[in-house]
Length: 70
Image (cartoon, rainbow, N blue to C red; front, side):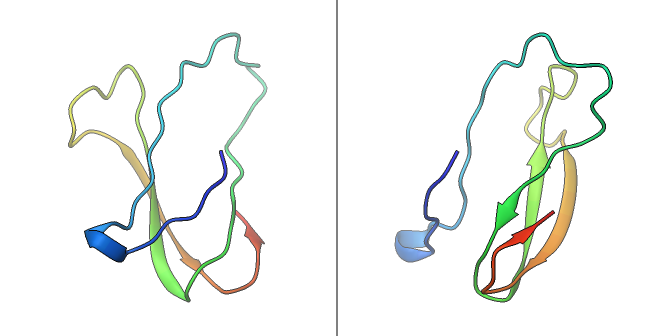
């Protein structure tokens, strides 16, 4: 997924949902490539075992103006 996130009009988040089938059991994580405005951001992940809105896995990270992989 690619796109621009803006805080205009009270925005500031992006979301997508997808079904993932046939996951390689050897996988150990997720990689993201981001850049932004030198602020903290959070990544929230949900699975079929975390169906309620308050149930998710979360990780906070600092985003700089340079592209960074996490």
